[in-house]
Length: 374
Ligand SMILES: Nc1ncnc2c1ncn2[C@@H]1O[C@H](COP(=O)(O)OP(=O)(O)O)[C@@H](O)[C@H]1O
Ligand SMILES: [Mg+2]
Image (cartoon, rainbow, N blue to C red; front, top):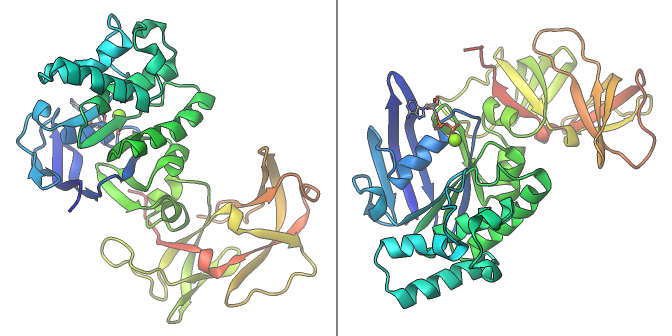
């Protein structure tokens, strides 16, 4: 049984379907991120789950209870908004007690509930402080404590860290995940920040135009994106167009402006089975850290398991722990620069104009049907 199950959710504003037949099922205790660009429908979906916005079609099931028709206050779902929405004239403790009071909890139980929630966000010492005396990070934790104080079945968080500066945000990402895990919460965490989603999530639901593009563990979202949208939205990649010239049981030979590149035959692609037959146009994607480089002359030839091409170094970009090298691409349509990620503090930095051999495993070459611009 899923902790939360969404089936065929549709929400229209005028002619626009902001949520467009969306399905999602998450397990008890899971921390799931909803990752997508601004305007793709994340907040709308969260509000539908919470019961704050009615949907036009579909079902929201929590545990084995169909909640679709229930008002927000009867769903027992905790929500943390981007703005925290704390009561500035109340103390930390009073803010956390608010939800418990509203549902008529006996006084002694309120005190115990508040103490427990404060403890789980490590703010016990600040119970009597006014909200206005807290830092941004502390306010964020009060908002979480308030949401978990009523022991909800599910907690929804809408970009709760976006107001914090980078350093604090990175600390809070780890702390927040730990707090929710310790409290045994099932959580849906909305973000438009791919790094945040990769760091925090048990699974990531990549959302685009009101639908889920891919729902998977972070490692697979990054290393095995199933659509061009996910490839582009999460991480960097070199991208090269080509045409399939040969196909065997498990490999494709793709003619590109860089010569022949081999790729695996993709398994179970979404949507109508894409056309990976001879003659089909495809897009190849390669993550920069999959590409190894060497001085050109002694490089062995490409084979069935390794792609190799020789290219000239264009730009190099120093990034602290690594260096990103951009190689000159032939000027042909659909060819982006190839990028390799090299360690920044080993060996010498490649120089502009050097020729190097790039090699990467055939199995790490990603293949997508070529999308014609919509
Ligand atoms: N109450 C509303 N009335 C009309 N359009 C809305 C309303 N709420 C959201 N939208 C539209 O729905 C789309 C998705 O919005 P939203 O769910 O806030 O996206 P996200 O949280 O992913 O940025 C946007 O185009 C937005 O303008
Ligand atoms: Mg939003």
